[in-house]
Image 1 (tube, rainbow, N blue to C red):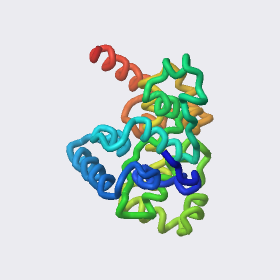
Image 2: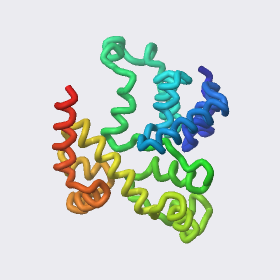
Image 3: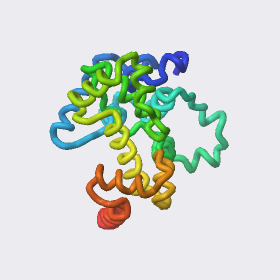
Image 4: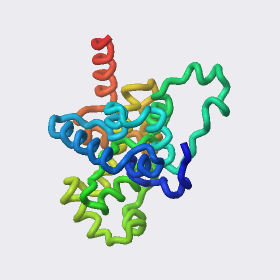
Length: 226
């Protein structure tokens, strides 16, 4: 696979990255987005990358390479650069899992594609939500006023940029609570909160229950499913 320059892929929607990589056509991306929209109407929220894999349009390796490129990273050739004993222990989901438990994974590939301003804002915030983000920096990066940004967010996402950041942080924390044994104060720190009490209040507001209750419920569901 011949990769375009990484600066042409960074911060781009996943579909565009895969098109530039030569793995998909625009028609295939539109088909996957239609499937995603249909699933959303039925209450499911499946990332576009997983839909593309499920449809057989790309492999899991293609998806993980594209996700890395989307963040401005290059993936090494595992067969050449990673010891064989390490490769044998890796699963196709490992790169995504590692990103998730550190709070760095793009949590939702579903972009508001018919509003380029919001789509660009989602990408920008998706790559920085664990940092001390200032909305003024987002407005500057998109060359719009603070008021214009808020107006678009309220109209298309029914929230503010700050509310969207909190949504991403809550989603990231949920994944960590489900898949790791990290202490809650560490999860708070990994998601941009130095004050655990502030994190707990945000999580309860976003999810409707405490972080401890959410983890207990997730573990109970996991045991039932076994």
